[in-house]
View 1 (tube, one colour):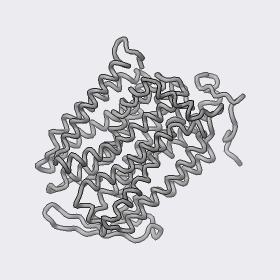
View 2: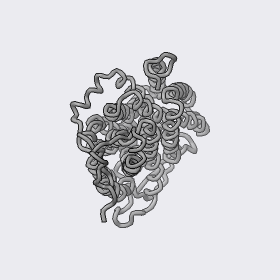
View 3: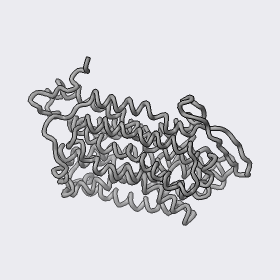
View 4: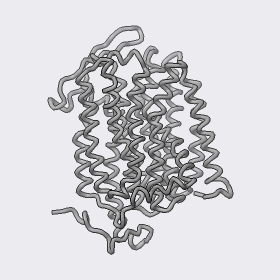
Length: 459
């Protein structure tokens, strides 16, 4: 028996979410179904996108991959490659929902996540020397398919909901989706510690942990589980998308019709603002584990990066729906201003704790970094609330996708920038100072166009 309304279009093929009667009778049911199925798929998109940020922390200790430990820059580049792919894919993905429809896009794009999940599990079982580094970069690049999905999935959700509910809906979807980052960084240390997937996952690897005094502790881990554990839930999501999702009725819009957004000044201002917020979230999520490892790993009683790194993305993910909901109540621009100010303060304050002399210095460093994640999460929700107010629905969808595409480059730029600062300058503070200047610029942009008395668009 087929699920109800799977292929049933509203009367006369019209979609009117701003019509209260239509929304109550038809729109809310179909919109909420699309929201929850797509959100499930987005969660695992983010989880597979950021799995390499956790894998790379353990990989240099695996027999056959020891050469990675000699050059932190090689590690930062592996963490950065999924970000490069995800951001680049988001550009075309920004426009495909209105071209091909929600059902096809979500189900197919989710199914494609099986490729990077399997590839990540496979490579750790087949050690390569440094000549195989480019193969590893390519496999890490494939994980970016999960990042690309965000632009398409969020564009889809914006079409289903009325403006008054978009801040909450987009906040819920993006917040739970973002939660996939912290989930993968939390779960990977758990699942690699035992053969939870049984004989299907294969044999363990020898892992060697070297203490600051040079002593070594040898154990067995199942690092392949970091990729293989996603195969079944991703398959379930792809099937659910194919069965339960449907398209917003009405004529499809060609890519050329959607390109009108590039003639809109506010597309560019919001792109910069969303990079400030989501770019920071994604960039810090990709960088945080390696930053902990490289700043504190050589100290006695050093913290385990994967015991703490997931907390930052978790906080950013939890507060994003709150930021979207609050923006529906008080307006997005004021929250974006708040987010920028806290990001600025955090980027300056954290530089006081980046030259630790003992493991005790980790505590204030951690708290400031968590404050940065908090501010980024609030801003993620508020900026996505601003966009549907500034643009009409048919433009808001591609703008949401485009801004998310450019912001996703944060997950590439941040690891590369911090890796460069650490290896070339032996000082990550330069990277934080660059971010501080960027935050000042965006605080000014948001205040001038959207937040000040007499602003061009109060939102």
